[in-house]
Length: 373
Ligand code: PLP
Image 1: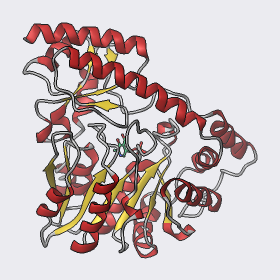
Image 2: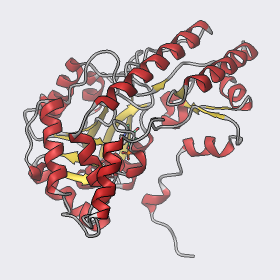
Image 3: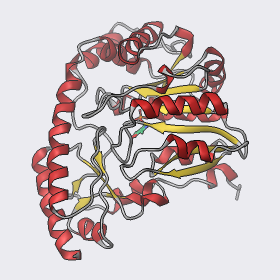
Image 4: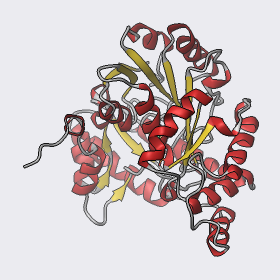
């Protein structure tokens, strides 16, 4: 048999998928990483119109359509206070491809990539696929990442570090002061900062500041997507923002791996970014209400729950056997270890599910908590 590459053998199918596969058909799924809201109607319509007008039959520019990149430029000026030109952007197949491009273009064989532990599963896997070495760093008690801890882990072999705020799986939000510090670490240590901002709008306390706003060098690459903000995970549309030189290198990977992002999705994302933004406010209000219920209930059960200030996840510390008791009772949750070894003893709950289901799941968790205490 033909052998497989060392790179692909270094990664495995995500632990999240394993939990889903073990779940029964009528279980309540608190494992999902996507909003339970529809894509805004004007975004859907824009794709339909583009298809009907025959505008989406052909490849677009490798960078993405000019009009989408203009909408992305306006978005960053509006929300993040930085100016871009069309050659600072590549439209990608979701935030996932954007992360992949950043790693492939910047990580050499054996180089290190620092990332939060627990952290989004792709950081470890994409580092390995690029031939690099993941360097997980522990989080503060409130589950944010300390810029000083990142700086301590920088070595001669560090290619990049990843910042993710608001974060998956913790819901933690880095303060503007932390973001300024992360930018300083990138500038002063001359390492790349990959800033994963896909949850930037889903924030209840504090404010989101992109480290790119503070950086003095071109060492920050921003990853973003329409996926979470506009409930468009199925459309597969994200983007990467960086200096022209970095974009040119990432474009080399994108050109051969993808050619261009899906054209209908580009039209939908352009409409989402440039149309009315009230769907975000409605979604965030619903998430905040659920977050409050989940936080109250879990705390009342006696669990320690760092307060999530964004995204739609909560990560309580749970006693031994708790996860099994919950899974056995038909509620799908993801063990913290799926996000890194420092996630052991924690569980990730996603509250991207309706309030009734959520309350039912919380009652089951209460029973499970009694069973293990
Ligand atoms: N970054 C984080 C932190 C995520 O949680 C996800 C998806 O769950 C992504 C990136 C990738 O998102 P996309 O669906 O746009 O590829």
